[in-house]
Amino acid sequence: MIHVITSANRGLYREELHEHFRIRHDIYVGERGWKALERADGLERDQFDTDDAIYILGIDGGRVVAGSRLVPTVKPHLLSEIFPHLAAQRGVPRDPAVFEWTRIFVIKERREGRNSGRTAGLVMCGLLEFCLDQGIEALTAIMETWWLPRFHDMGWTLHPLGLPELIDGSWTVAVMMPMNEATLDTTRAFHSITAPVLIQKGPLRPAVTEVLS
Ligand code: COA
Image (tube, rainbow, N blue to C red):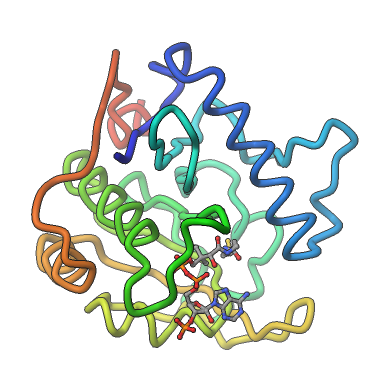
């Protein structure tokens, strides 16, 4: 199932969070070859993994199998600090109801290809459920363009914030994606998911109101 971890319930998920940072290192540094993220401790963590970061993790039998990160756009985030040029046309959104989505991954054994991708689909449904529950109206993301047909197939609306650029050999674009019930419905249908998937354990930190205060 899909779990949400904020600074408020982090104590319940210490081992899983640590494991998730280790998997991120394996995947982003090892597999994807993003050497700028390499760290001696073998844990991929950057300046945006702060107390404000929210993690949506797929955990199966105590094992982390998938993950994703949300960061409020009213705080420093990847688009505002590193890639603002990708939003040259529409500007970098900074809104308490808009979060930046980064670091989606599925461990290799659970990858299934675009047309099934159930584990990835569970993460996306969990993410949508969380956004709707928390009043998050849209996500921004910096994505390689091979994602575009995939989101199209799932019924998502993507608003480009600027023109695509070639980054580390991959065409990459910044987008804003409205979060709404219709998108949750089409994403569930695409992945044959019929019921809510999100588990929220322990004290919760309300995402939008917390950022406002
Ligand atoms: N470049 C181009 N296409 C890619 C790709 C890449 N780096 N990674 C995945 N894809 C495509 C695959 O070709 C596949 O398409 P197909 O089904 O038409 O062949 C589709 O995306 C699904 O990928 P797959 O990995 O088989 O299954 P999945 O849906 O279960 O998982 C990811 C998708 C992206 C979550 C998984 O590949 C992953 O964790 N990758 C490493 C982390 C990553 O790159 N995340 C994105 C940037 S933060």
